Length: 81
Image (cartoon, rainbow, N blue to C red; front, side, top):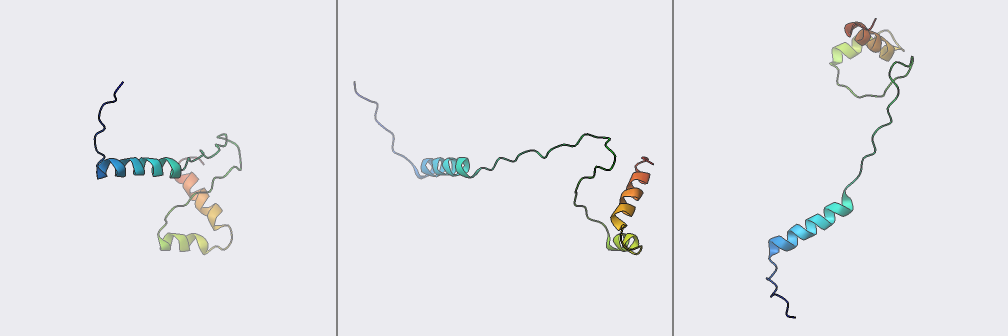
């Protein structure tokens, strides 16, 4: 049995194949963060937010516990208190 003639490879074919091979080897799978059950008292989650400098200084003026004061203000604003 004769095989059909092979078409010549083009640069774009080789580039596409190389990119696909590289992507499959370097793709990172991200494990989902473990979820904590809602409603447990005292369970806090680490987050990163941007706050205006003057607002941050306001809460830090009272010394240690400024993060708790921000949390309390956010709870009040959210109607959770």
